[in-house]
Length: 571
Ligand code: PPS
Image (cartoon, rainbow, N blue to C red; front, side):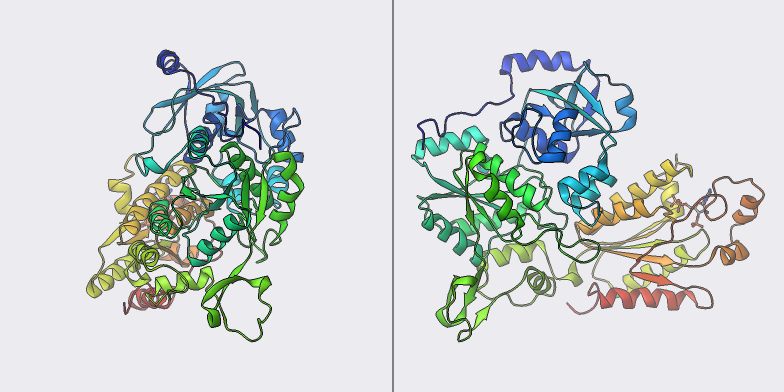
């Protein structure tokens, strides 16, 4: 260990005085409103967490990173850190220009000196960085369906850090952590990266890792963005705080990392290592299936369980941070303790217990017992507060289908039935109603329809988040928009897509509002099913065939579906 082990790392911030001046100048510049992910990236760029990067990747750096995990100057860097923008914004920007980067409130956080403007090959990026161009991978999905089509690259001048109002005392920049380690006299420190609540197995594993490497321990959870569907960071941090008491205070510390994860398995492990190195860590725990994204669209894992460890091992000397491989810990009931699964010599003679993540979620969602050998009661209590059983959670029923298919009528019947049952506030966001109240200025172009559906999705996600039932009944003709709404809602509760599959011929025959006639005569343009597209839902939770059945029966089918999903019924 060198004496300069925890000496300060270079930040990209200018002095407070210069920042003040530059902010005034930046007010005149074109400005880009940063997305949540870009804010996370920017914070770690500015505070040195992404050292040696000096800004968003130029085209040459980007190509190097995508192809062989190296910047143009040869430095190791596995993850493209890019500023993706819309085509419209990019049109007005030329290399050489400075742009102001703002947070959602309009606060200018940094200035980007644009050196490069380029259109990435996203399919290539997906293949090389994430291993497959498959939108089942959350980062590939983000790349294709959320990220803008043009990247801007260039160095950053940092004016101020993004503002966080939560857990301020638990957040540290790389230099703050380095200063802490210096002050405490810690020279060997092992970091534990996590995006999940810590249960007993994790506590045991981290404690063992620290003991075995004779190092201090830093619990370093990610609180930026993790995998969609994860437990929110507020809950997790309260869980971590509960577990922290179980570690010796003199040797263990916890700090929150505002990273936006990509779930890129092996490349992500190397990236995590470099970030931890920048934060002053000397050792890093890499587990089984580190930063794994789950399974691909063929139902297979994207990466092998030890690919991340293998890649980390390959680069650890160059990175200057040592891997502590994670051992899969299981509970040996006969000895009432956790042991590494591969070190149990008498495994055929003892009872080994384990609860998978899926089983844990099931137990939480059904309000079932979670034993003390698995988790700490304080942690379970926190999780139960955030995740009440399914029958008490909010959810959204999203009807989609042609105009006149019967969506509104069935949605109304469903609402009445749910209100009769009681228990949760229920709101109907009917297509026509929304167009009167929320979207009165919108027409029926693709852009306007998408905006309309996004608005409905946003309101439904808020209702779902707050424990209510949202029933939506727009046409919603585009599959990608419906998918985006699903993702937004599934962060908070179930999304139940119901395709009201009345054929266009039947809708036209019924022509309740006389619109089809007008559409055929060309008096209404862009009419769904006649002169505008409708993407038939491929995998809706329920498909209703309305021809020859009555409304009551259709609403019953939805109720039965909700019951089978555990969303209504006994608590
Ligand atoms: S969308 O595509 O989801 O934004 O449409 P939505 O908000 O559900 O609005 C559909 C209702 O508007 C009437 N209408 C049209 N529909 C489709 N295409 C065109 N061009 C159009 N112009 C008006 C129509 O009555 C729809 O009502 P519903 O309740 O679906 O019959």
